[in-house]
Image 1 (cartoon, rainbow, N blue to C red):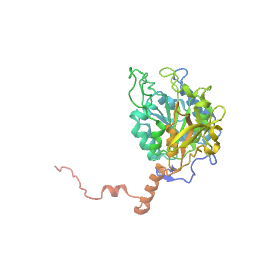
Image 2: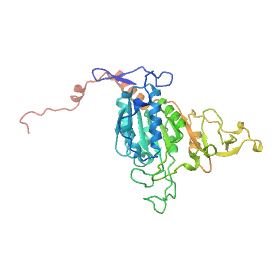
Image 3: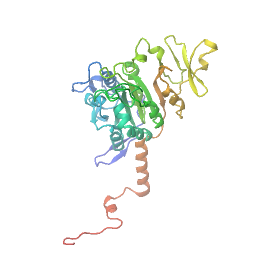
Image 4: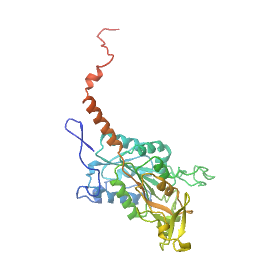
Length: 363
């Protein structure tokens, strides 16, 4: 982290990375993060829940509002910065990660959130997402995934299921859908997670953990668009079926699911399989144990490929590792150059090498 002195120079700060243990005690509540702007999403949109859980989570970090920034791209999700009583920037399509990278380079002490959608992040913004993740830029990227372009009125998006009939694919899309978490893991994001808009407690906990992470955090939120793609995830997220069709990941615990807690995931060769506890001698000892801190992303990647109806859909933190962040490495490189070469003199630099003087009247 750095700070700025009266001369405009950045100085390294000694603060430890943000954590629940060292979070400042600042008397803020959700109301402090609610802006005076009228919230304009379609009635029943899942974005309302994501906004509410974000506002509820912000006071936990003990970060002053003036040190929190929300940066968004284009899409329905792009409106969220207007509704947060903090600094915000509504950028151009797909480029929110690039602005966030620049901001963290210039002001690494700020807490920066990137709000994006499946179209904004994975279509025109795909390249920018990849590089912000591989650089381990210390940003928290929350991607609203409703499997559709909502703001432009219902075209197929990069996550739309194959065969999906939309205004841009009336005969059904022939494209294979992107698995967002697989992309984030392949790009070496140091924190990867998934939650659901209507699972409010789980969503709040997931955002909380992303906020405390020091490095590139990618959170996919399965979100409903009740106008152009109603029920996008209903077959496994509804209260009546979710226990049997979703797998809640818990670090250090066996992968158990089911309304009766009698189903599990074990590894058979290189592939996961669903088993029933008690059948054919299967016990908890046979099940995979979740390890979100594994340095190699093999297990997390396998989980990112599991999806209903072949498997229960995993939610929670898939991966969480510690490594130097982009701004730490950048500041370290600058400090190293100063140690070896001195502070530097801009005037001396401009007059070095081959220079010449243009005199008045010269042709």
